[in-house]
Amino acid sequence: MKYLLLALIIIIVLSVFRYFRQRTYLKTLTEDQFREGYRKAQLIDVREPQEFKNGHILGARNIPVTQMKQRLIEIRKDKPVYLYCASGARSQRAAQLLKKQGYEDINQLKGGFKKWTGKVKKG
Image 1: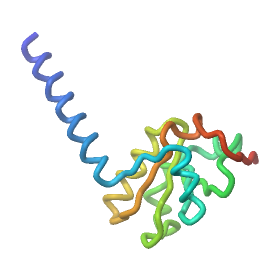
Image 2: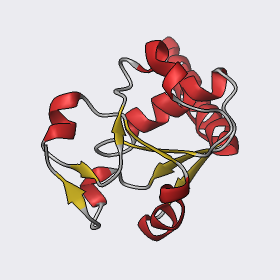
Image 3: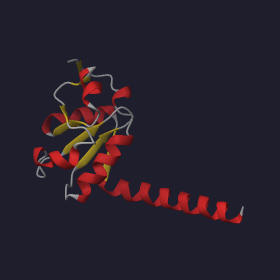
Image 4: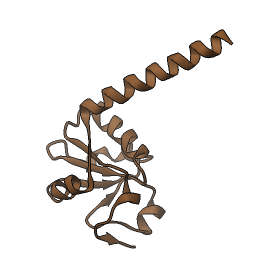
């Protein structure tokens, strides 16, 4: 029981640490903030291709987080990167990968595509 409690405490501490570290390089934007800047940025949908086909933000490119390492050449370091997925978890993973590769201006849509109320394109 004592070891289980210790393991739980370690997991909580690591999660809190990761959360605050991520906030230093990943900006989570409201839909209005996201809308203000995404046209001047690289808008990347990190969901899988089938999800993208079912509907995505107008102007977005589909680079699934599962393919991101192999497709980094498609993402410029000198322009802001705006990421989104369904709810936010995959865009956080993508942001972590981009940060490790030296990207600076990384943003994500708060709540992901599920919360998006703007224009959507299908197909």
